[in-house]
Image 1 (cartoon, rainbow, N blue to C red):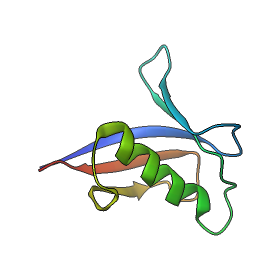
Image 2: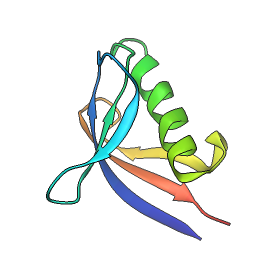
Image 3: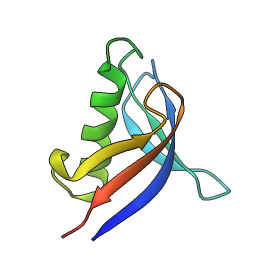
Image 4: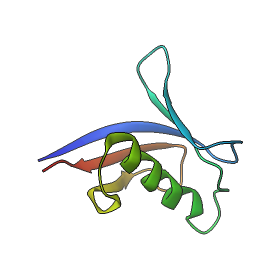
Length: 76
């Protein structure tokens, strides 16, 4: 079973963390710069640890080059 979530990403942050804003949107703050996929790789690790999943269970479905991303969580 999989679940799709929308995440707004803020690269170049001072610390890596996941927060929820007033509208219920997940905001992921990542330390990495959006160069050569580094921010996306850190985002996958961050989302996986936030939801208690393995990195292989998290994938970016759309928005790989933008700030708004649709993430698929493969929940067994």
